[in-house]
Image (cartoon, rainbow, N blue to C red; front, side, top):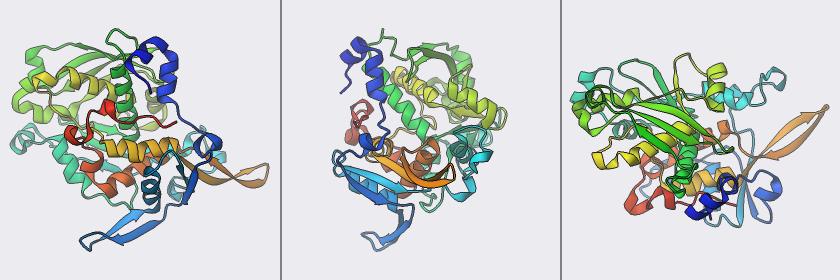
Length: 367
């Protein structure tokens, strides 16, 4: 267990332990009972007699969650639909298939207001929009990201569930460190009261790397604050990061998305949560970053990350053989959305402190 003291004393070793992910067959499966499944659909009546569509993988994860120390999951691939599979000879990079999925999979688009008048008259909140949109999701379909457009710029914002979870985990790691530790997220408010009331707050942040002893400085802008009055119902749509240059963002810029599109990585999610904590006493207003539930972390994310392998066929030197490997980011994203589609918004993307406790108290590590 990583504690405040161990983070500060052990530095790099504590970071490695907290973000460690088992990858080999021996590490993931070991002597555990392996539940074999596939991407097939399962239809069963619920308690009210309504037929609900689930995915075989979700049933396997539910079984594994009952005893994660002694159970693991093997998914017989492929996981990604054929439309996103790229012949290996056409790959520009080793991560081509997962990037193709993240780029072209259907968005879960929030119908954010198109004008200030519409936002104010409808008291539009991201929580309300998420609930309305997520109830329409179908476990039989595939999804790739949560998206919306800013009112002022009309620029698309994009947020992957994998980055929401990884960013929340990074925030938790920061919270385990003392405030003066280099593992702690630094937040410097740059707030002009009049400007913040119109355009939201600006914060200069420094977020630690998950893999190296360095921090990423950048800005969060258009952060909605309580003193913005009715403007806050519009400001959140233009939330953005500026001057952030992590590896993920550099790759996004060179390959991934439409020019000008705002893509939130795990660092920006962690920074936002740190800002939210800082401004909590002033009536901080929520934004589209979902606050993940204990169930979503412990019964879905942890198991996909540390107790699941996919089996697929590969051809080497003209010979076809089966290999087992961890899920990549595209596969994780697809399955996380399957879980959200089946279990619903409030069970996955809505943390209840009275029921879930603090996110720092969730189990974030499976060895």
